[in-house]
Length: 379
Image (cartoon, rainbow, N blue to C red; front, side):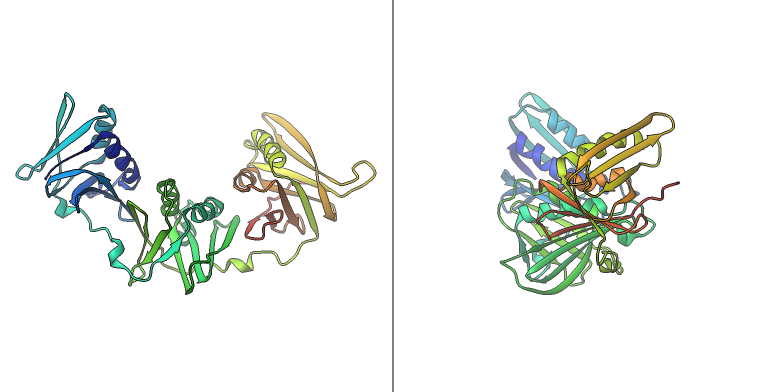
């Protein structure tokens, strides 16, 4: 293999695939990134067997070939080079990659590319579903934070993705909260398809698709074991999580007795301040919802947090309250997570009792629902 490419292009490509490199593995080759010539370009690939990312960058290829080299060493070395042309040459007998850039030169020992796992490509599936990248990133942002990080229930570490004719729905839950986001996909018409994708894979998709303008093609492999996202110069492949995702519709409250509408930014700021004191007491913040009265013509929301060690905090917000007064407690971090992804200027909190789940909605937007379990208050 002999080729040349620009330092900035190689550095960018390595940063894209680098997050898929296995941090701990019994297979040494998984700590490597594969470099291979492909149709006049340089293809970079990395995988941890759960997700795989391939990226194509412009290169002048003089001789075909492939090799895998340690990802961290290569990335650190390339990032330290000047922004000039890099010449790469492989010695196939010693599996050593020679790199020259300006007045710098190194030899990096690699592992034969035949030992690198095969990563699925767009040609391995049929019937691509095309999605707008901005829409897809927005949906991922609204649900992925609710997925579980605890591996005790693997199905909850994933995001349920449902394609139903012209609708796309994503749902994630960790047992304490649930996020559901829906959207209409005009250019697609598909039969009902339901898959569970690891939350980490969707996070990576959102990261690598930042510059994408053309539609992202979604391809499910025939065995329904993997899902592939095809971008302009990037492919991301993920294993799917097997099992039945819980019926989240049963968790969504069918009604409410109190609806409290507030400014999103004001509520987020108040909860963040209370969180400074709630951190020492299981993140508990108490919300006292007060309907309109002589003192407050429209109603108010009082947020309090107490810490035996640090002290206490109290914040009052103007609110439009429909229904009965109520005191309820939530995990402050969970409230911050959901309020941080809501762009609408106003947000509604729908509640029933102090021990029933609360529902958070952007006012005027029915496409997003967040359900949050209350915390027990010691009276």
